Image 1 (cartoon, rainbow, N blue to C red):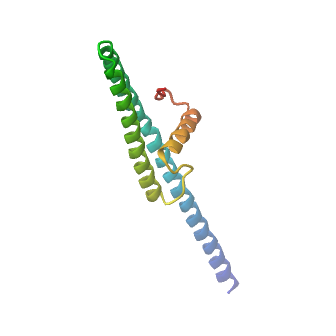
Image 2: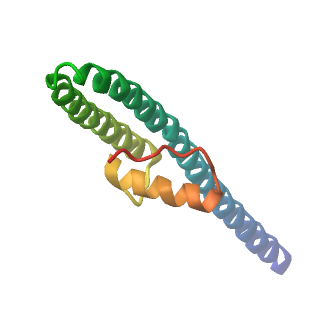
Length: 132
């Protein structure tokens, strides 16, 4: 009888250990996926920055003949920033709902600061340049 109790206890502890280990592995996998998604989002920011730089060159050239083009460019930048932030907020909200745990950020602005920390931590180059 004592042998059965020992086997039962060992089996129970072994099962609890494996359940805990699987849960930790699952959380780590989700965290890795979250970080990979955020690091991939850097490319979206890079493309946005590059597109706005191309527009800036074109609108500055056109602005030499008509200053209204410079004002138009500033409006385009403002609207583009607002739209990207809106899309980013939606992505972050969806990701937070999908992950099943609370992240360190709740919107796109907070996520970009978090991404910067990830970039510094992981030593990734080719970061998007902030437009000021």
